[in-house]
Length: 197
Image 1 (cartoon, helix red, strand yellow):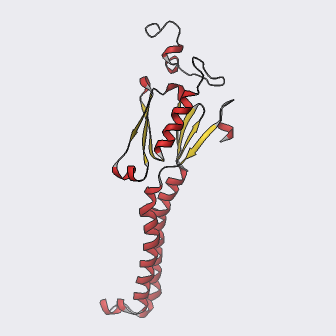
Image 2: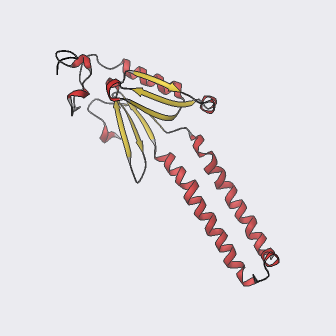
């Protein structure tokens, strides 16, 4: 992260999405091995031979192997995938920007300059309210709205954003930032006002 900072920029906080999205993957990680052990014990007792007479005792290792492979595949495809997705998503608030980084293999990164933010909104569902999490929408005016989903301790994170915005120098473009387009400049910093281009 240190390499990605601009000169004079400091990290205020780094957080991940609320961990509630891990409830079902963790539950599956507990239930699937227990269910697999139960099915394997059921196979060892000879119950498949009672259901289908053509199944012989020689099939027992194969049936147990199939159960273990299916359980492992499910845990990798469902639980492990969702844990990796949660683990790879980060929200970083610095003294100048908000960065969102998502994904391990296919990366999705975006950033919003604190100077561009006009309004910081909070939306919470009933479950999010009970867990003190929520979605933060960053209104940047002319270029649209960015949303940080499932931010934990949403009140504190919003407070950090507002405090960082208050500490920005007024009427100054930060050294080291390159503006690719004239449209990225805030209206107050443009020469000649809004109507002249």
